[in-house]
Length: 185
Image 1 (spheres, one colour):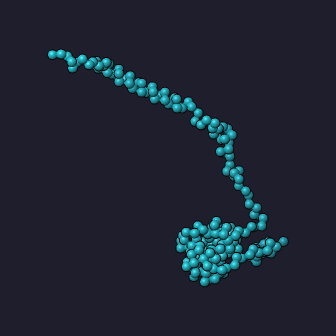
Image 2 (cartoon, helix red, strand yellow):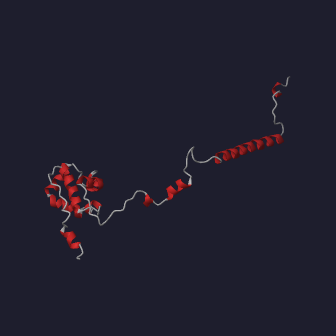
Image 3 (cartoon, helix red, strand yellow):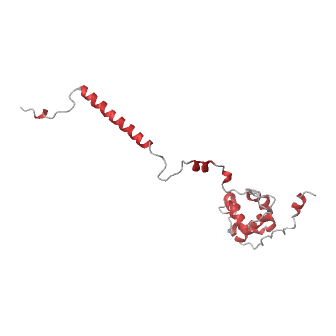
């Protein structure tokens, strides 16, 4: 018989050679990982042309937020009254645009019909003072009563009413409530 089945011989013939081969394999893997980590961490983190870590860029990111285009409001300046549509878009649309908390949707004549029948003064009073789930002035205390009335007219006129938008008081005259609150000289 021939030794045909034993013709193939391995490089590893003893257990000692097997241990050396396995240890060498792991050593090559560990050295490869170390070299990859060194390669990845020696490069700058920013892209080409990136100045994100420069002193000026860092100073821009950490400066106070108050320097970012905020304007101070002069509380002594005369108030510029908003239109009914502007008040609706800023405050009222949150509930009257979606019907949240049972609020009648603007433009829904059937939902506004009974309310419009109560009259302009009642609707404005409810909007200014609040009613059921609706807070006073729609939750925006900075609104003037005339602005709230304009928003009521805007919403109700979309729903079939024919109310007239209130005019702003003349600049030289004060409303009775404002005159009473003004200090005497």
